[in-house]
Amino acid sequence: MEIGAVNSLSYEDFVDTFGNVVEKCPIIVAAVWSRRPFASLLDMEVSINEFIEALPESGREGILRCHPDLAGKDLQSGTLTEESREEQGHAGLDTLDAAEIAHMARLNTQYKLRFGFPFVICARMNNKATILRELSERLKNDRAVELACAIEEVKKICHLRLKTLMLHDLPNKL
Ligand SMILES: NC(=O)NC1=NC(=O)NC1=O
Image (cartoon, rainbow, N blue to C red):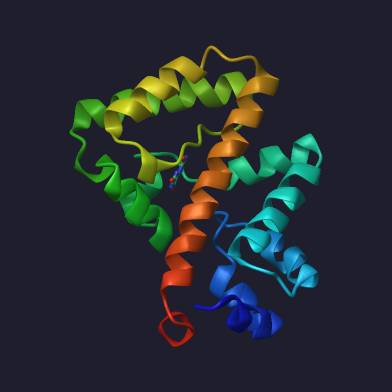
C-alpha cells in the first residue's frame, strides 16, 4: 500500500486498517489521523511513537495493560487478536507443554505484582528461550527503566504490524 493511499483513507477506513497496530489501542491511530498527510510510513510511525511518548506515565502503563500475556489465558482460550495469535505462534508460544505454560504464568504473575503492568516483548523478534530470559532479566529492573523498556517493545511490535499492513493492498484488508 502506497503512503498516498493511506493519506486518502477516510477516518473510518484508517482506523479500521491500522487500529490494532498497538494492541487494542485504536485511540492512538484515531489521534494520529489528524496529522496526515504523512510523508512516508516512517513519518506515520514517528507520529505514533511521539503520541505514545507524550502520554503521562499512566497512559503508557495503560497501553501495556492492553496487551495479552504471553502464553497466557487468551492464547489458551483462543481469544487473542489475529495479530497477537500470529506473533505468539511465531515465537513458539503455542507449542509449550504444561510445565512451560505454568513457568511463564508464574513469571508473568511475579512481573505484574512487581510493576503493575504485564510483561511486554516483541514476540516476532524472539522465541520462547529468549522471552523467558528477558522476562527473568527485566524483572530486576527498576520501575522507570522497565516502563521505558516495555514501551520500546510496543514500538517494535507496532513497527512490524505496520510493515505487514503496508505490504498488503487496501482491498485485502477492508
Ligand atoms: N505481552 C506481550 O508481549 N504480548 C505480545 N507481544 C507480541 O509481540 N504480541 C503479543 O501479543
